Length: 78
Image (cartoon, rainbow, N blue to C red):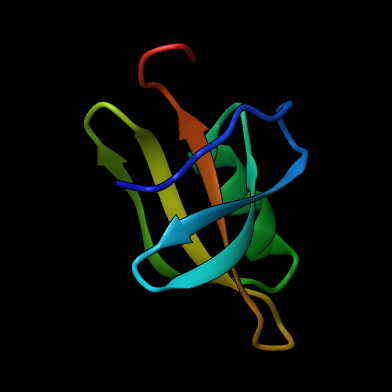
């Protein structure tokens, strides 16, 4: 399970995914954020997908090739 700390929506944070750290942001609406990122040239590499007890997550790649994630946390405490 990702190691997620509480952050304000839209703020930069890190989450441990598998064996690598990916830059990303906690967002209020994962699907809307993905559509906005696609409009700015990002491509979706996974999701958006629900992870029960965690939230809704999408992995993206920006136009320069850098990977990042956006997540709407829905687990306990969020």
